[in-house]
Length: 425
Ligand code: AMP
Ligand code: GLY
Image 1 (cartoon, rainbow, N blue to C red):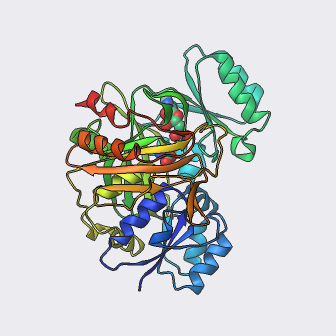
Image 2 (cartoon, rainbow, N blue to C red):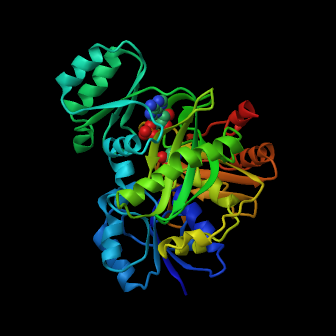
């Protein structure tokens, strides 16, 4: 039996678990810590995703053949280096490679060195200096970013000088993001539409996946504050075959060259967060060092190649031997969230209408937990309803049909997931 450990507790990790369970070798899965949806797929462990000593000890004593890291925090902390020192196979970049997400300053410098298109930027660590420079700016908005990990909250799009100075002060003076905000990146605002393309890499080759589009804002029509992601669909017609090739040539190929030249060991997933301008220019908004959530929930169901064999090939540095095959279908994910999210919300609400995953509809769990045989809410993003169908319109219809059968107190969701696609056709 192949024993696999999946680290994390969100919808992304549930979706990875479902994809791995489809593998011919039918692996035994462990989730650390998992959620109510991952429980029927394997064993949920009471080990947190950042408890590296406990994860290491579990992997050693339970003959774990391969560990898959879902979220960024353990990667930035260096879990891959720790596991590899103990000769344990693990999917994710080394601590150095994880800087691509862990330090925006490092990532921007790397992009500059290797000519990867991204917004122009400056780095500041002193508020007075930043204030002097920003005071001479006359082109707004500008984007202010905490250098380190800030749980998705470290970015401000400042529409005016005053807003920019407030954001800078919060980072550099009030230390709102603690060490993560001691340095700040100030960059040009990029106009356009966003898309996410993930890629597998073993440091020798990079194999991009299908392009997806997230819906970050809480409200319909991209209104209201940003969230972790309120829904996604795949593939997106925003990325034409020509643009896909451009992303490969101008982003993934030079990134692989950077890994080789800088001796960066990277055996995992790269997430290219892209901005596509009206003129068809492509820029990196951010790199992440892991699968995205909720995009994974719509990318993996379209992957026809056995995911476990891809991960094994990455671990063995033989990814060149794998040919990625994709379904011609479309997939959509509608996120059901707790009322109040992304601000304060209540937990512990009973969820009704849950049903078994079928061939074309999956109910992906994110913030859920078991409570005396019942499944209750335990997070902001609670569930993701994923539908796969021959066309995007059909997938949207099916996902919303199931969405309407599920309920919990104060449940909210966007009613326009996937509608943007019509703009790009
Ligand atoms: P990040 O945490 O870097 O992903 O930023 C969060 C979100 O802020 C992105 O998904 C974009 O919507 C927006 N954003 C970040 N940087 C820029 C930029 N330079 N121009 C326009 N929007 C941006
Ligand atoms: N969907 C955005 C992220 O995973 O960072």
